[in-house]
Length: 357
Image (cartoon, rainbow, N blue to C red; front, side, top):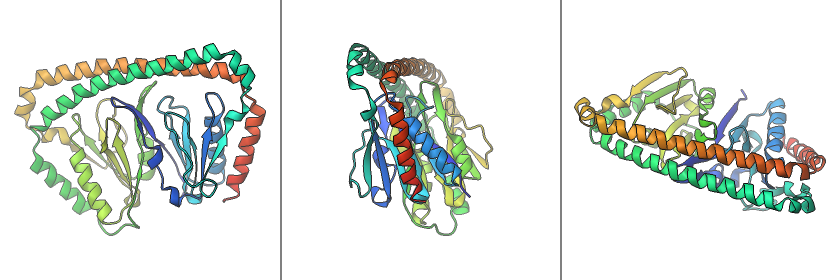
């Protein structure tokens, strides 16, 4: 059965832009990696969407990879069966060919700019580019401050966590769910979502597409990582391939874990990242913290939550300003793009990729 999934390869966080682009697939296993070059308004996202839809119509499984700056725009598509991907290789997620022509290659949509016309709009292009960069800097400062407050609250709560109870619950899940052997090890890394100009966007629909049984981990204070890490280690030892979704704020920590071979997933749910779909089981991690400990620090935790919320909203406002600057930049470039040339290039690349079927 073919299916369509939706993930992110980049995410906005309190540590700045987080990037999985150079880890989203094994280059040695790919047949064709198309690295798109070209600036704003050159048609990169449209090209990827056109190829993706055409592959869907041919019955292929397609993975759409979205832009954290604009979640309506694409940063990449992946067509697993024919081992082909098309990605935006421009900043802030620059990708360069590792095995030129043999595996990966450039497609430069920037060649369709009218350079002389763009130079006449140089002042506007510089202004909107710099305005967008400044907005991102403001966003990351605010998100960084919010992250510090949340990390402080999480560390405080963790002191009251019943670690033995958590371990016992985790091992019970492993014994019950991880039976048999998988087809082979290896992981795919994806962000399930990101903070964006439209607020938090989380693609839990992809979890439901890949997994029929979903454990919802109710987790206000980032307590889920030890459980998810232990389950992932056990799954890897049994050869089950995983889709590992890191926490954008702490990319070394697992935030969501999908085991498609078992149709099994574990998703973290909290305010701002609420999973509202059907749950096979619910695990209340917050309830594994001593109630007296919560009560003792209730006022401090409430203060941290309010402060983090206010700072995050400031960061989101800056992300909206960055998107507005990008839209204005695209509007400047748009009249200077030869879209007939772009359309011809899209047709040529689609024909080439269709020949792999």
